[in-house]
Amino acid sequence: MSLRPSARTEVRRSRYKVAVDAEEGRRRREDNMVEIRKNRREENLLKKRREGLQSSAIAVYCQCLAAR
Image 1 (cartoon, rainbow, N blue to C red):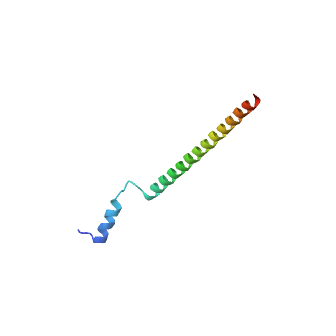
Image 2: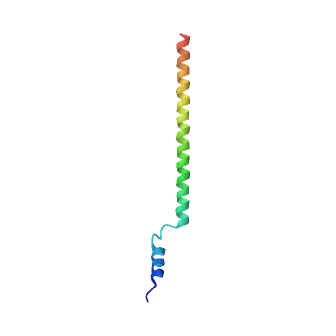
Image 3: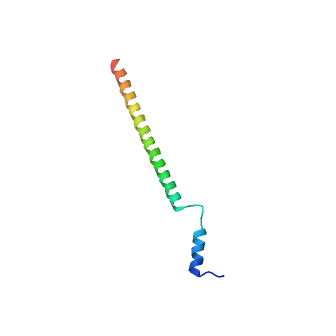
């Protein structure tokens, strides 16, 4: 029994990469994007905290110099 050419292509498409479901792939991409955004936010917060510590350390150093 031979399939029509269009039916054959449909069969091939349905069997191609069966392991990845469209819905599962979308969910995985969304999870990855959320994780990336969280990491970026955390990095930016750490940078701001470091800058705040450095500026406060400079202020303390200048106060010590002024006291002498």
